[in-house]
Structures are given as C-alpha cells and as structure tokens.
Image (cartoon, rainbow, N blue to C red; front, side, top):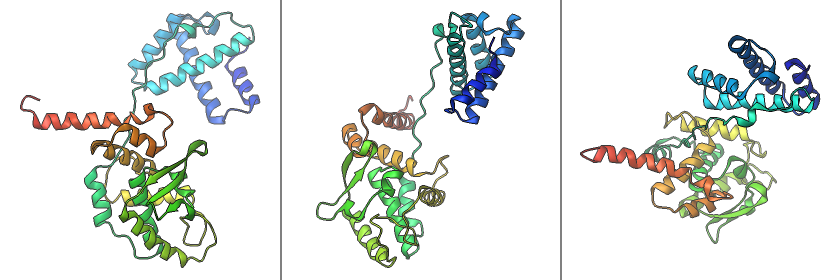
Length: 293
C-alpha cells in the first residue's frame, strides 16, 4: 500500500512541484496521519471518514491555525486521496463531503492622502538624474496606478505629448490609454532632459544611471525607501501605490468603471475590492461624527 513517502516520491518524479511544496505535503499528511492514530486508533487513510476530517479541521481551528493554512492542509489531503484512488487503494474520497473554511478577504493596503502629499512636498529628491527619475516614477505610480512590470516596459513612444496621455501595455498584451496631468507632463519633460545626458540608445523610458533597462528589484527598493520616510504601513511597494491610487480615486468620487479601465482590470469584481476600504472610511467618519455612534 502506498504511503506518504511513496506519494512524495511520486510528486518528485512529476517534476512539477518544488521541494518546498513537497515538504509541505509531507508535513500536512503526516500531521493528519498522527491525528488519525491518536484520536481514532488508525493510521490508514482509506479508513478515514468525513467526520474524522471535520474533527481534524475543528482541532486546527481551536489551535488558532489560520484559515489559509488549514485550506492548504485540506488541499494536501485532496491530492493524496486522488493518488490513492488512482492506485486503487481506496474506492471513496471522504474529501468530497468536506467544505473548506472561507478565507477572509484581505483589504488592499494603501497610504493616506496626507502621507502622499508629504511624500511629494517634503521629501528630498536629489537634483540629478536618479533623483528626477525617482520622483517621476513615484508620481506616475500614484497618478496612473500602473503595475511595476508595466512601468518598466514603458517606451519613449508611450508618451503622447499632444494629448497628455501614456500608452500602457498590460496583461495579455492589452493596451490602455491613461490620461496624465500637466504637472506630470512637466516632470516628464524635465526627466527627458536629464535622460539625454545618459547617452543611451535604449527605447525604454526609464533607465538606470548606466543606461540599462530598469529591473524590478531596483524600483521596488527605491519605492520602499521613499515610502518609509512618510508612512508606517506594513507594505511599501509599487503595488501599494497602485492600491493607493484606486482607493483615493474612489474616495474622491470616481466611479468604479473609470477606475477599472485605468487599472486595466478584466472585470469589475477585481475593482470592487477597493469599495471595502471606502466603507471602512465611512464607518470611521460615522463613529467620529455621529452622536450615538
């Protein structure tokens, strides 16, 4: 009869699973096997009933294991039972009657409006190529909600000076046009003057000081460094600036469809997550303002 070790060896031969994933499978299955032995006096997975699995899930909840981790453990069990069925070791799958716990949605982390004002008004940006470039990158992230990968791929031809827009190539090679303010256009013109001093033939809008194409880690580190000067939020990344753009737009009256188009979301449900932040803001205002709140 195949055991957990055999299953892990099987996964390894598939060459589709990382060592970390296989280790997690082994840990989860061993934990369930130990639970079966201690609570029901058996180590045989083909003797496990749906009630046994539900009992195990309850015990994990009582240990304050996160819902995300519990669902991963259930996923490990599902994979193992598919393996047992495939090898004819069991003719039933008790996981079919198991409902996985719902994972609470994480609200997007965003930075406050006053903190963003502080970033651009009171933060020192050096008056050299990197300083001018970094300020423009931060302004563009906040003004357009572009993804890190999209910003890195911007070309000189992406800028439309006549119409104050930029053309962004998003997921699935879908292009979108995003309007930008006169202030951003002035920053772009200022940056392009500095860029000519780099003497590079690269078509990309943003370059390193050595004339190379930007790479994600450089931009991430730069954004994290500047945001650390104005905010204490847990995450300080380009994607947080994307969340910040969307949240501030919604808080200031923009409709969801407009935000959806600018962000390049395929459907409205992806954009609706930002309404949760707005609802939380309304709750806080209500608590502070209403005499009976």
